[in-house]
Length: 207
Image (cartoon, rainbow, N blue to C red; front, side, top):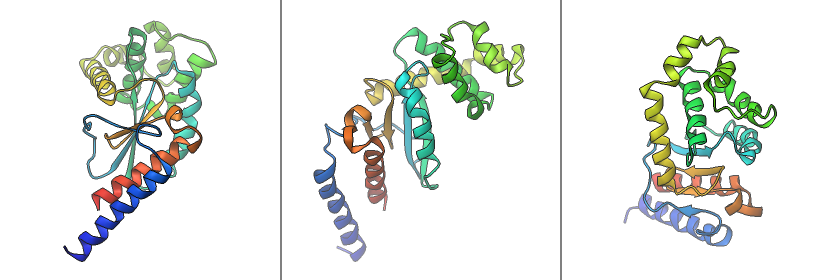
């Protein structure tokens, strides 16, 4: 066995020892039954699975954003809407419409605020459009994108991903398509400590 392989092997074993002491699979995080394909295999993908109507997601949003901004370019972050009823399908369409129109960064917080501060349900297209209108999106363009095959396809893909992830609530965090954790699982350990441990575990495996 080469020196490089010995070092890599010892690193993996060391990470396993740390995991046994600090984080327990089945308690602090779950291993997905089948890995889910990530967008960029060269990076470690961290995906927040959320729902605009979830108060916990509303609280988690700025914390996730702050954590995201502290990561280097080896970590890729993404959001994926959870879907298990008709209302969530509508809210997922809002998300992908904003993404398609390149309005996500400026509208993500506003959509949460509309639901949790202004108490809007955001289920009717006329009410949804008022959010986009403030950002210079014409009614014609909104209708075209919101009802497009592309947006509907992305919603279907998000629904399929959520099933593959085995999501049981929101928010949950998926690490590199292999693991999922949440505040409920991580508990006092802290969800981002678990996330960072799993990121390092994946980096060690890649090296």
